Length: 496
Image (cartoon, rainbow, N blue to C red):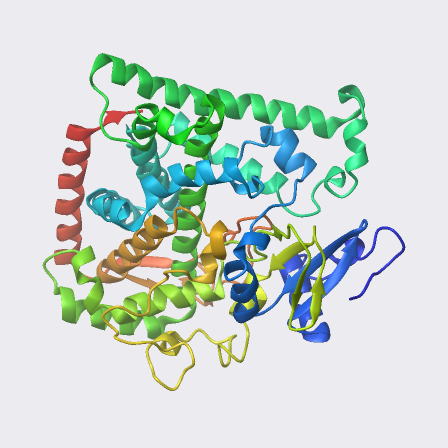
């Protein structure tokens, strides 16, 4: 353990890394102090883990005492009145929330959503080819269209709808506010006793909560009205409204659970899609290998489909390697211990804040030799420690650390995994991706390898690239699929 300065501990050191990413600082400390170490911050014990094995040993195998959350005054209490599933402490209420989450996102349910994912990805691909500069909007539109349809039965046409703008603005604000160390009240809870007129952070949180509750409640109310009119299609919200007694959640808690599913799926999917394009720009040899596999399995006359996945191990390896090198929640989401524990002689006191630092875990040289190298072969070849077979099943992202650990695993992981597979396969099948060229010199522009947003969930800042269709015939296939998808979606959903 290292304790830093009196009282405040090592808080000031967290942001000393020249990049400003606290997960980089965690990683450097791990190299100095070992794969599990402690530091103090305002009297609290923080435990940082830098390997997948220790993370699984504690957060999964001892999940009964490692599955709670720290009660952050700003992110937990003020922002949502302790109603956000992400921040709920481990207990009976969390179990009721998880029951609803599990019912609508479990593997068997996720498979039933695949036709919608194929429709949404076809539309996204057509528009991406038409204007690659809109890639951020289009990946966000795909994620929004999917989760809004699944959760509320809403169809998104353009991605510029007010509901998409409001949901993403709300999500980005939550991620910003929830970033560790962002607000002093989270490390000095005594500030909660300040009257609201003296506490700008309380005023900010109250305004956010009012907007968020209004937004989520309106969406639920719209589904309820459609049910009463007999015109509601299937949705997560309808499932909850028609089975309230089964889930035993208050109206407000249920509303927050449903809104939180958007957060779980939308940010992860869009971020991974952006990182996929970035890594293909930086690693064109692997794009070529992926395209060769797709051409062999799929051919030239149709888009890739989910049934192709067992025969696409390179695709799955490329996607998993993207997720390894560019984890969405790079610093992890902290857990909290509910009793004292000892791990291999290492004492971890009750109430410790436990950080599974995904960045360090994903760059562990023992598990990932030459971790700084983008190498999907580490999932495909037997000489690597991460290899598993059969390749018709592995690699996959089931229980992969990018989605968290143990009982707090991301509830939308199955949906997000299928989404990034279908997005990546269809982009690579239809398109060539390369470095952009400087218009004045003609020289290639190499985007930064890591220039990402500093937030709880992170994504790359905008970067230049060129995207072109591999052939006119493939573009025609894309156009036909997008037209069919648009017609199908309009027949079966309500436009927002």
